[in-house]
Image 1 (cartoon, rainbow, N blue to C red):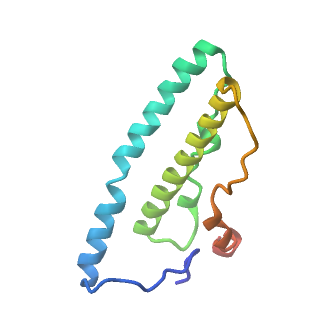
Image 2 (image 1 turned 60 degrees about the vertical axis):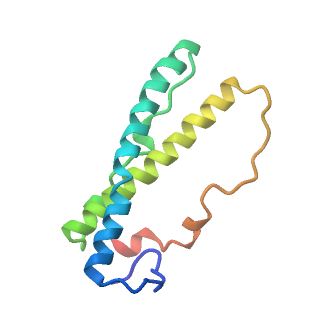
Length: 130
């Protein structure tokens, strides 16, 4: 199987099943904070943007579950893809809400030269996996 970003083989000396279990706990423990952040962003937009009549950001433009339908994935890979779709989309949505806040409320604005996600430039093209 080929991955979008090839895994580096830097595993500690932990047996395979235990390593996977620990990794799953570490990764999926982030679901609760992500859901809480999602709720806070929802209410933040409704209250703050609503009071100041700032155009709201459409969450559906960022949080999309499109990898779930890719062929050739087993159930667990689909679940992992759904997690990544949600987490990455939500973080992108949070950035957009933050940008919208800055545009409408910050006194000092300047161009930002930071690259938002340099790691994604190493990804392989999606069409190879459809």
